[in-house]
Structure formats: C-alpha cells, structure tokens
Image (cartoon, rainbow, N blue to C red):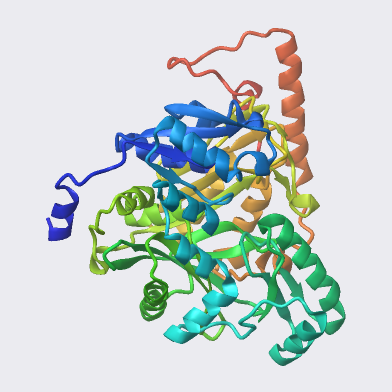
Length: 509
C-alpha cells in the first residue's frame, strides 16, 4: 500500500450529512456514493418532483415550492436555509442549475457550508470563457483563434469575424451545455445570430455576453477529467471523446478516444494539468479541447463541476469520482498518483432524453407509462425515472444515462446497441432508435467521429416505421388487455412480465 493510501485510511474526518442541490439521476447517483460512505443525504424537490427518484431515495427531503427553477433549484436563499434547517455540513450541486454559479459557491463559503466543488474564485474566473482564454494563453496552453473579451457591438463583432475568418462560432461568455452558441458561415448571418445567441444566453445564465471563436470543421471534442486536492496535487483520469452532439450538446461519449495515441494523450494530459495548476483548481473538473484533423489541439473551456459523462471514466479506471469529490472537499489529499491511473477496456455512454429526434430533438415531456431497463455484464444505467413517473416540462429532459464497458471498442459498440434494443420507455419520445442507428453506422464504427457528425450523416433522420408502428401497436394492445383485467403472471422470483414478454416476439429497431 502506498503512503498516500495509508493517509487516506487513517480516519480523517468526513461529512455526516450532505445536502444534494439537484434532482433526478445525478442526485440519485451522488446519494448512492454517500450511502456507501455512511453519509446521510438530504434531497430538495419542487412541487413537480414530489415523487421523483431522488426524493424517494434520500434519507431526508425538503420541498422548495413552485416548480419554476428560479423559485426552487435556482433559489440560493431557499437552498441555504434548507441546509441550515437539516444540519447539513456540505452541499453537492451535481451538474446544471447552480453547479457553476460562483455566487452560490461564495454564499456557501460565507455561511460556513462546504461547497463540494472548486472555490468560488476559480468558478468565477473559469466561468468567464474570455478570462479563461487569457489565463490559458499566459500559461502556454494552446487556444482556438478568437476574441479574448466579450462584445455586444455588432460592428465590432463583424470586424472581429473578418479577422478570424468565417466560419465563426458565437459563444456565450457564461454557462455551457450548448446554450448561446451559433455557427455563422457568412457575414450576412452574423447580426441576427448574435442577437439570438445573446438572448438565449441571457435567459439561460442571466448573462447575455458573447464572443467569437474560429469554428473548426471536422474537429473532435476531447476532454480530460481532472482531480485536484487542497495541497496542490493534480492528476487526470485520461480522456473522453464527446464529438457526437446535437445543438452543440453531447449525446454519445466514449473512452478512450479512437483518435488518441500515447504521445498525444501525454501532451494533452499535461496541458490539462497545466490548466488546472494555473487556475488554482481544487476538486473534480474537466478541461476540454478541440482536436483538428492534423492532430493539433486547442483549449476550449474548463467545466468546474462533475460532468454528465463521468461514468465512462469510472468504468475504465475503477475510480469513484464522486467519492473523490467528497474526500477532497473534506480535506483529504489525493490517494493516487498519475502513474497509478490506468484505463482498461472501452466504455460508451448514451444520454437518454425525453425528446423527439425527428423534430430537431425537441423536448417530449409527459408520463412514463412503462419502462424496462437493460441489464447484463458491463451495463450500468444511471436512471431518474420509473413507470408512472411524470417528466416535467420545467427542467432539462434527461431521463437516464446508459453506460456499457467491454474489453475493446467494437465489443463496447455491440454491447451498447443490444442494451439500447432492450431499453423500453413508453409514453414519451426518446432518441433510442436514433442512437442505435448512429452506433450501427459505418462512420461511427470506424471511429470517424467529429462534432459535425450528425449534420453530415443524419441530417434528416427518420426511424424505421415498421418498428415504430409495432411498438405503438404493442402498447395499445397491452392497454386494451389491461382494461379487461387480464391476470398477469409473475415469474418464480416475483417479477411481473412486461408487455413485450406477454405479447411475444417483436423487434425494437
């Protein structure tokens, strides 16, 4: 056992109660690790989430009131009051909502509550993408050609775009998740696109500031997971490729990247650690890069939080990132060195949203009439729904994250396809058939994954109607049969048959 591991196990203090300031699958995921560590959890919920899985799985739960995010999950005063009322010592923000809000982190610091994430100063500086660019330039980390300050004057933006060269990418200074981003191919499109991007950013983050970067065609989106403790120790947990995106938001992630070589991994990993060092980073985060066709990489941004796609790193490294977040926040030093971190096999994550891929991935809220999760070796499903759950209209429509791991990439792709085939969600539209088609495509199987993948290969995707109609018919028949009060038999273990088992063989395309 190495010295650092010995220090970890000598019984340093740990939190006894943590408030999870989030909802759905990510809140449940955090609570699972807390439960393993013997930490009591407090859930928060809005009126729309009274029966959500994170509420049912917590040790204690408090209602924040109205479903509107500003009145519930974004209400700092209510969340701080809830922590005080329940005696929580720390707050885990998950991702989204207040996870990258420096005012929230600063308020926790002033109130004597531990914010499980980086210091408010770091969140503030890295959250402003133009300041982050300036910081990386000073440290020698390569950045994408573009502006290093926010701008609102259309004439100034037009001049900057001409100097950068079209196509350009409009980006919001604050926030993430693809909000406030627009690709502009010509000068004629710039003015309206800037107004639209600024308006969207203002609505999403309360900050409409924008700037321009050069848009790299056929680039790969590659990120490095980092962990940093309070003593200046920093490691990265290898890379994740997140190039399959719709509306600049990731939907399929994998590790390792098909484009990675040992030399490139070392170079990009060193750059990620340098970015963390120069910013004074603490806790878990992600340094994101774009990799062009010539093997050159450029700093994109730092996500100062737990990422949606963190499970694939956990599957290949065996490291529980949430556990490390809690230990670092409690003052523990990192128990591992860079040399000890090894990846094994290949892992893929598919994000399952309530959305319609035929209608530009428009949200599809509603009641989950029936769901059946896939299972088997190497399959993990971080899930926030159940049969009968009402998917609210007020929040991000993510339902679950399906993760698979296997010895190699081809095996992982095949395993994910079969897992998606087994995944049944009735009552709302999901991208499951679309994800299957992406994974089965020749370009994906070859590892030719770039940020414009969907636009190039699936611009007008439609499902195989035969399978869609079969699913609809299966649901209708099951509903009609239910009205006749047909008895449903349980198997030997007391598990009741699904509609698919009672109806016989059919295909889920």
